Structures are given as C-alpha cells and as structure tokens.
Amino acid sequence: MRLIVGGLDATVIDINREAAAKLNCHHELKIVPGASHLFEESGKLDVVQKAAADWFTDHMTGAQP
Image 1 (tube, helix red, strand yellow):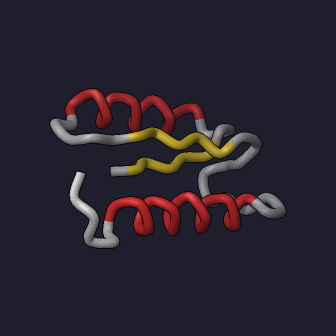
Image 2 (image 1 turned 90 degrees about the vertical axis):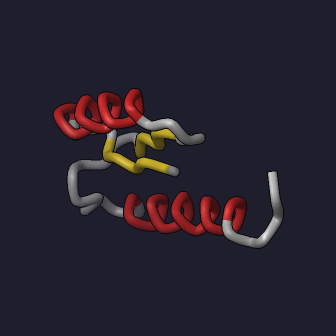
C-alpha cells in the first residue's frame, strides 16, 4: 500500500503516519515535497500520478513477491 500526502499538509502527514503504524502489510508513506492537501501546486499532481502508477506497475503486474 502506498499512502501519498502533500509535504505541506502536516495534519494529514501525522494521520497517515498513525495509519501506517497500524497496517499489517507492506506499505510506504510517500510525501510529495512542496505540495498541499489537494496537490494544487504546479506539477505536484503529476508527481502523485506517477507515484500511484509506479505502485500499480510494481504490485499489480502478476509478479509474485
């Protein structure tokens, strides 16, 4: 599981860290530097899209760990 959060969104970073600590699966917290809650800053949504697409490519291609 990949959790993606904007680096300027301290409250949501904390919430995601708490959630990640409770997960019983492989996970990663991806913090997008300079991004706010809705990733409205120039280029930040592209970073989110790539991080999500990379996760799907890495984990949903049928390869077994």
